[in-house]
Length: 517
Image (cartoon, rainbow, N blue to C red; front, side):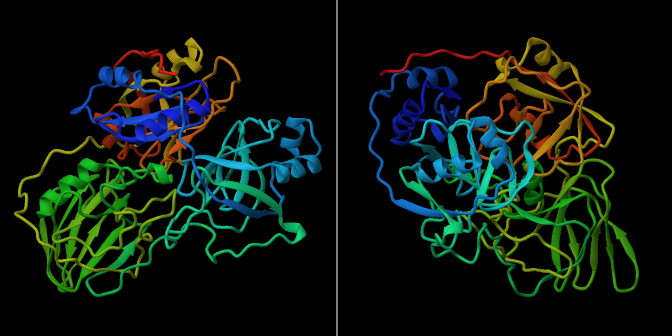
């Protein structure tokens, strides 16, 4: 994470990095005053990267062209009154000044189609909510800090809500899926006064329809089952996180068991409760959470099959995955793969962004792809540990980038206290609860910056949120630490009711480097 002095300098550094001036940089995620840099350590190490960044000239920004959009808004937001009070304005003045301002797209992030817009009215500067909402409806027009934004889909968030619009921010059927791009400008129009623009019938991103055909019937699905692969890397510039299987090691092992390429799509099953009946002989493997697996034939015979090994299922037989005693996510691979639609190069379902295939439900039919496969892996491969509710799991973390935003006592408490996984957890993130909340050094507002799978963000409530694969690309609460890479897959198997103890594997070590200006 590179922190800079202003939005202008941040965008100048972004321009240099996008111009491929640094070898080994895989992806960059801009924030209001930061740039998150993902790099390949096989090409460039951390010290060399810091040295190279310090040599970049950020004194000049390239001009960005763009379009002007008029977007009608109904000013009916839940936070209108509170925001007006924070700014010392009346609600009428707040609405009028929001209408009079010109809003410019500085960068995109958080979610597909979410644009961070600066304004030419310096009066707009409000804090985020102390506790983020679990769900903000698609089309919500909101402000936080000095930015305005429009939520492209239903999602959690901490911005203050001013109103709603029916204009879709993201539509994968358009040539440019995101309506707004850096350099574009927006004028909001009062929908109550007849401001109307043509809009798509779909306001929020829509999951891909099911593939039709014959194959494997789903006769039981207690909870939604998702197609997952290795996700969508290098799409952060569109506000799209990597997504993919939460336990990637289990996905790779499942595909190895049946001879598929490691990136083939599999079924991600949460807490078992799945039954499948093929109309032809198939070879399957189940990995991840060790759920009981049984095959029922037409004569009523029941065969128990091993976990993490390939097994054959004849036409008409029913294979069932029951609730695992440990862990929570199991992965089902089919030799030859599944026929599944891809969005942005991946078959993964992103539950936050609502892109990818629709969840699999009872009554669906899964279509075998019959793609070329190699030899199967007959012996079980070693996967991650699988905790159960009540267990205490040690998770290694790297402190930063915002550890110094918290009091010394809170930093010590973060590492010494056990954190319970709450029922509000999902693929977006694990919401944690501790006996004592974490406290910041002051009430300063953090401007939006990039986040990662494994980032541990702390909202004003002081109770951490540990981001998983469907996390927002950017966030506005300080990240106290990031889970070490070797423990990321394990996060996908920690169930509700388990407790986490964070262990630092390195010291908090921010580096200061002067950039060329």
